[in-house]
Image (cartoon, rainbow, N blue to C red):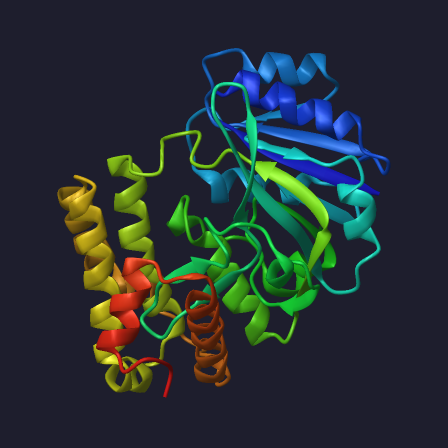
Length: 329
């Protein structure tokens, strides 16, 4: 049985559209858990009317805490985690349920505009991380095409619309709640990889994602959390010798992201996030580091570089590869 988990903080209209697509699934979820992070627009009431069991957090506890609460209460042997602002093709669950691996995610396309216009551009496929401690949702913003249409093994799925085997959480635990929201899925992917537990990207399963519908892509709170959590990724997963060895890519990746934040008027939020990350570096520091991490990050960096070369460089990645020597070494 599939348990579908949807964390929600307002966004009643978006939730309604998601529930429509859940009801249209050819393989329907046997349990629907909507985790309310303190909504004030009637979203939890709508969820109850549509047959969901609503778990009230009582406040905006963040994505990680909300999802963890629902995973602990889920009865299904498969668990689907879905963003409120996503819509699924009718066969999404059916296709992913047939995939081998500990988790599976599909091709997520962009959706936007007041009428929910569906774009042929990629929103996300899977996540890849560079040596510098920043990640790219592979293909984001690119036109859909053959290079995004081949299934492949992955270590880090975006938790936009992903199906897990419930046993995975018994093996490696839950989302790290200190992240609150943003990059907690990348942290989970690194932990999965450390245990040798991988999944699949299955492009035949298609969904559409509005993206950053809660706060907005360049909202100061979004930037603060991302900036802080980039530091947390390094603290939790990089042994000291790797930080020393890759100090230059780390510095370049972090500072370049700051330049992007300043360009969007969020420089102070970026500074606050980095300060908070560095201040709490010791508190979140990992204890058991994955010896396979360098190889994983090199592979991720090559994936990023190859796709940037073939589809056109984002300025951020162009400068990152120019300043770090053009690729992983």
